[in-house]
Length: 263
Image 1 (tube, rainbow, N blue to C red):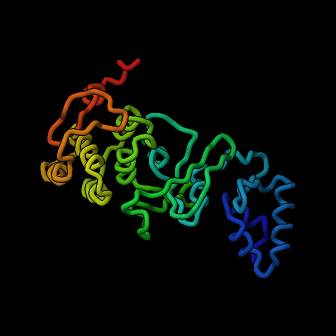
Image 2 (image 1 turned 90 degrees about the horizontal axis):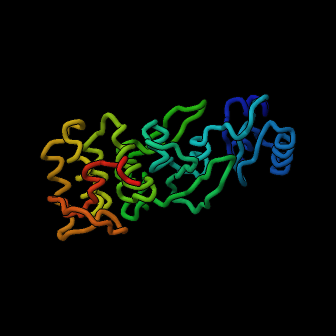
Image 3 (image 1 turned 180 degrees about the vertical axis):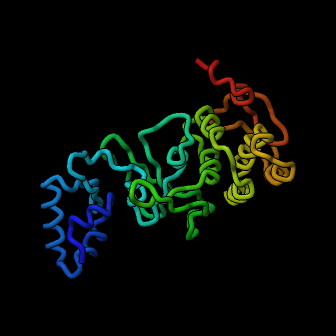
């Protein structure tokens, strides 16, 4: 059995259960006492009930990798939406908010400057074991981050634009991704059973056909699921131009990507 210090050196973020397991047959009272002692000494910091971060000498608890914290926030937690693009280094703006998918009941919490927000997976895939797929474990900061792929993140922010920061942030961020597995993008988009989402994905891909090597067959799969009647790009009902075959009324600023002209 390793010592507590050896455990802390290899666990930048850990749960109460993980620490208890490392202590072998120690009683729950002993585990709680040890954790209180290490928190009081400053070697460990409590993030919230049942979740802790190790604090190496000479550092602050707040410098912990926020994506590691999010991964440990629930048994199935996966960094999602804008936060997953940020993890992959593909966002126009850096946020102090980390969203994570989970099927478990969870509440938002803050630690240091970061706000952590649990998100229920989209309804059509919410109860699947893999929450719809497109989730991977990636080594990072001495641990492993459970995070959505760029393909899933692309569809998720187009499905729920508010979690992507709005159209300028979404477009500029997705344009930073050099390559998408288009089959994965389209399969996941169609699995959400949303005509608006299929059309938004199709719109973005059609605008970036050459760069992303988008073929007619890709767009045809999405166009087949586009709205049958004209719909606004989102619930704000911002005026724009009707774009076929997506049947979306798209604001001129999105069509021309003239973000710098927006005051």
